[in-house]
Amino acid sequence: MKRTTFGKAALSSLLVATTMVGCTGAAFRPSASAVQQKGDPGKLAIAAEKALADRDGDKAVEAAEAAVQIAPQNAAYRQILGRAYVLAGRFASAETALSDAMTLGNSDASTIVSLALVQVAQGRGDAARSLLVANAATVPAGDYGLAMAMAGDPSEGVRILSEAIHDPSATVRTRQNLAYAYALAGRWKDARMIVGMDMAPLAANKRISDWAQIAEPSLAPMRVAALMGVTIDQGDIGQPVALALAPAAAAPTEMAQAAPDIAPVPEAQPEAPVQVAEAAPAPVINSARAPVRVAARDFIIEDRNAKPVQPKSRAAKAQPAIAGPVARMQQAAFIKPVANGASNWVVQLGAYDNAAIAKEKWMSMAGRSSTLAAFPVLTSQATVKGKPYYRLAISGFGSRSDAMTACRTIRAKSGQCFVREGAPGATTQRWAIATKGRQYASR
Image 1 (cartoon, rainbow, N blue to C red):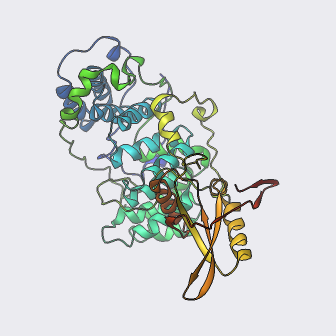
Image 2: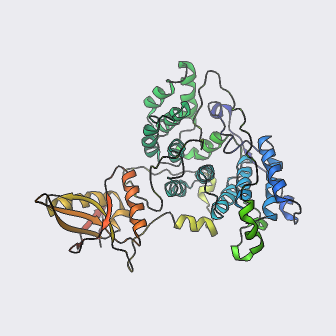
Image 3: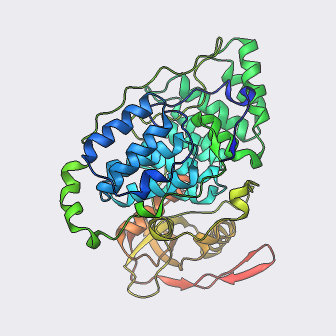
């Protein structure tokens, strides 16, 4: 099979996050899943972990596929299989396996970030960003920021990492992740300054030069492969059909044993990273630090000023229809206003001196975000210390939880809001929002 290898110039400044993805592997062996497997899935999973630690992708994929075929409802085995596929450079297969692992309940930070990165490598940065936002409370800020930058939103990555470097738990890697996010945002002076904080001048210049070679938006697959230290397998046709995740009801016996088997596999010991002359650790995703809540799940606010990344990879040109757990996960990544049975909870966006200012503020907010504009907008009057205010809020949430989720994400985008119950005298407004030649009314 054809495999794409990237030169040392693109790889030399990057260290491998072995605790997350291990290392490179070999090509797919159809025979590994063509025959009904027998044996102890726990022992096979241990063998797969050992193969990952030994940098043997062939054995890792073979053992992990065998374990999953015997115990298809075990989330830990699916996660190991996803890691094995990643190390073999089989990103399409890895996406399926990691998505299945999350469907079965494995939602740790390394699984989420690995899944986001393989989506980026396939030209699906939008799906990766949605996944990261949906799990922002789980992923450590240092990992979240770099992954978001890799997924096509370097400005958000810079924002998160700029805060993360001031945390007491921040390390040299946190600073280097920030430098890489600056580079992906085109802020090369800032990137060079941050890199220079931990490296000698010549080594820092070389790192910046290496990053510049893979900074083009169309080179997203190369950046992911370089970060993970793997070689892309262009011939990957996806996970074998025999390993497809069946509905839970179809395998009651396996579901019964899934709980005790969730994590019987000992963690592989991290390997020493490849050393670079005088180099501090390069951008690397490490899920060891405590999570920082930077956004919230299920709600996306579009930034109309951001320039979307349009990868030109082969996978992006001919993307197959998404089905099963991946589709369900993506659908769950957005909250949409509900017309019937909406709760009485609203998200208040501000309080202003008069109705005209409230309208002006809403037009500005909604003009920047079509998602925000889709929600019904309400105004109500309130008196605070004898002074009247016009409160601006959005409604249409199915529950208080959805309203809180929306507010947390608005705050993550530097907005202000809080959740409250709807006011009895609130008025629904129909303010026309004009956006790039189109007009639509808020409901």
